Length: 183
Image 1: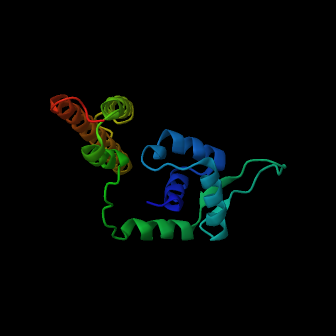
Image 2: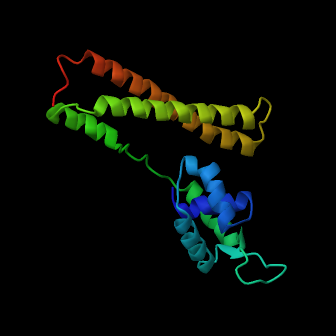
Image 3: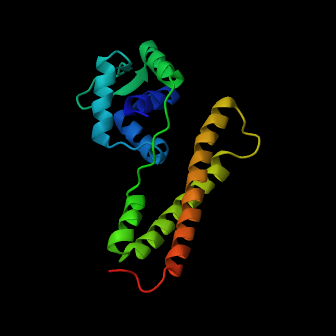
């Protein structure tokens, strides 16, 4: 996924200022695609220069007033093109896996504690996603847009479920390793 397409998606959902976008990224899109405030503002400038978005006319022009952006037809067409284009899955590149592989040759010192920390973080994220699901997707909320948004959330829930199960299994393996952890 690319940041410009994430921004176009968010603006099609609701025209927003740069500040509002960064807040929305922090609360929703940021769960699966993160961006800094500077990256978002930089991309807004590029999207505007490319004719994909425009700043809405301000009712009262004032210096320093925040701009509110909307998507133009060219931006909608670009998002539709990108959405329909095939993409291959990306390989999972997580440093934790590499660290486990390295531990096989240099020892496991400190790694078990970090696995516990990761497990705690994933358990908290899973609980947060499940709370969002209870709050935002009650039974019967089945409009097409809601179903697609829920599908994204379900992916997050399923990924966090995977991580919590896998980390619990990894910690069980650590407990069964022969002898003291290698140094």
